[in-house]
Length: 170
Image 1 (tube, rainbow, N blue to C red):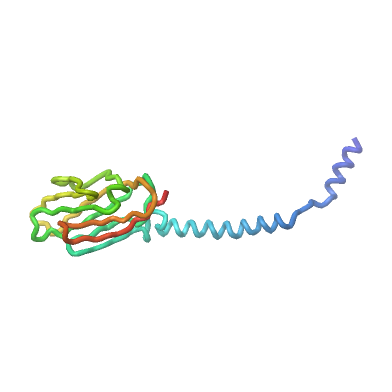
Image 2: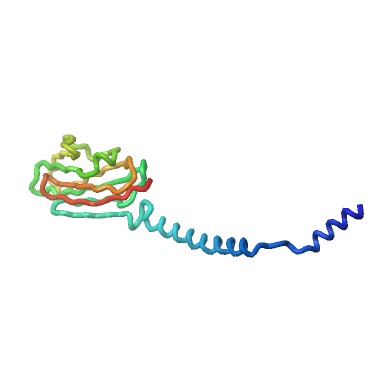
């Protein structure tokens, strides 16, 4: 019994063998890990990774304007709002072209169009103008199918057109 206590006393009085290279490594991980975590939180809150301040885009051309999201994720819902100045029009056609048909799936479309059809690589949406309105909005709920940079072209009656890019994260 006394030899057992002697072994414990001997171990307790010996210092711990610390490796200074591992202590420096741990210190670096703590320091840079905190900086990395702070950067991820700021980037996420600002909207660079998804919805937020830097993610919101707006383009205008003549009687057509579009509000869209610059960044999205594969198989996550995104929204797009197309505004049309309908003054002096009875009907109008909005065409979505570029990578739109290949890259996105349309989940919702409000209000319901009079007619929807595809022509080549374009999705064409036809609306009648509501009497007494000078501006109408079309809301699209879309879902990206693949990651990467997408170029979208939106045109109104083959006259006013605009283009924008969206980056889709995997």
